[in-house]
Structure formats: structure tokens, C-alpha cells
Length: 228
Image (tube, rainbow, N blue to C red; front, side, top):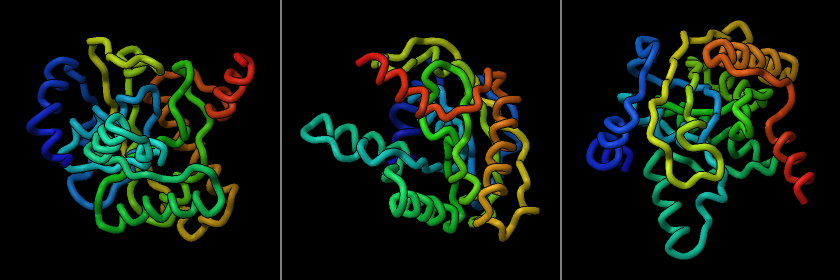
């Protein structure tokens, strides 16, 4: 499905219309397991990143995308499966453990996995505090980590917009991050926070976004409660 969507249907058209510019393509491993850790500005981050990679990539996506009813629900599920999305339950506890195992299974097969450490799209274009699940996955898999900065995707398709605006976007691939010095310490929450913060620092450096040291989900929840 991924190859079909990328090469025969949407891929060539999207690349022609939006003409994404790319920096750091030489930093992408040509084979083996790899974790792409990126900022998250727009829904289309997960659409354009696969189009510029030579190998398929899987993303962890909230399970609600796969449970819709009727024709719309079926089409939504088909789209997310076609773009490499894997359903995960984000309610915490055992669900979080299952999400971790889903990602690890992808990496154990020598495949590529995309993760957004912020856990959700930025509500305002700023960068928010990363969640430590990405650090656990890094240490347990031993996979190399490539930081990615998506540029201007929120201007093409901001939250709530159904039809994207036509303008160029950018994708910056940073140099691989090495966390082998922390191997075996995946149970240490201070180590997990240190790794996550190092990733967020690099993403902030690449993207130039304003950084806010709170979780994006907290900002969204606060905005929702104020609008009630």
C-alpha cells in the first residue's frame, strides 16, 4: 500500500505541487532500523516525510483514527494504513506498554519508525516538552536516532483546515544522535528525561521554533476548558 500510494498516486503529485526542499539527506541510514524523531506542526508531517524517504516508514497514531464508522471511517482507516500508520492506545498504563512494544516490533524487523516526542501537534507553532516514551524505545531497540525538523507545514495545513494551502515546505534531517552511553538504563527516569531533552534541544536548534517547557497536551486542555 505504501509503495502504491507513494509512487503511483499521490506521491508524484504532492512533490510536484509543494516542491519540498530538503537538507541533510546524507544523514539518512540506507538500511537497518532507524528512529526518526521529529517536531509536529501539522497533520501533513506524516504525509510528506514518507514521500522523501527511499524506504517505507511506520508511525504510531492514535487508535481513534482506525475506529470510525461508515464510509468516512472506512476511508480514514484506509488512508492511515496506506501512509504507514500503526494504531496505538494513548490512555497510559498497559496501553503505553503496548505502544512501546508496537514500535519495538517495527524496529526489530530492521525497519524505519517515525515518532513525535511532543506526543501531539503543536497548537500554535511553538515547540513543547518531549515525552520520555521515545527515550525508552531508543534504549530498548538500540536503533540510531535521526532528528527531523518539518518547516512551514503548519502554514500549509493548520489544525482544523481540511484543504491544504499550496506553498513550499522544508524537511531538515539532522546528524544521528548517539545514546549508547545510556544503554541498560531504560528504567532510570532521569536518564529518560535527559535523552528526551537532548532530542528536543536538537529539534529546536534545527527548526528555530520558540520552545516552551510544558506539554503541548496541557496547553490544548487548558484552551479547551477556557472555551467551554
